[in-house]
Image (cartoon, rainbow, N blue to C red):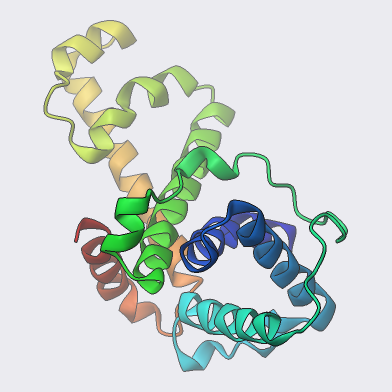
Length: 209
């Protein structure tokens, strides 16, 4: 549950921030929601046969926010028990006023979802390479995951003290593993694993729009 809270905090926080505009209020709403998730076992009611987890999560959060707004008594900030570490929340950035005006709260949520997803995949990949004693190789070759045209294999091969051919092969293996981890992460949030490709296409389409 702690892992789930860490992974999905940021998209919901960005959604809340686009609705209430004040970071403190957005933090309170997001924190309170995850407290309720744990207290009421919300995730146990998620039917994997009914679609995408990101849609279920947003719908549950929207319902929660709506109920919170209906309460007459405002919650005093800081009065809740800290159950989820907020370290690193700002790493993925928060929407500017212009971006908040450009996209709907739902679009901001989906854009942040894919950013958080990709960040998590990259962290898993980094940990794998680090555990295998290849941290330097990962740090040097990670630019090729997104096909950075400014990087030359001849240069990175020299840095890694390997042939250019070997560097190309290592980069290819890195990209392949990245795609595998991305597929794994997405398959955990959808009902039909056959929809992984379409989900990737949809999310990247949202992110690039």
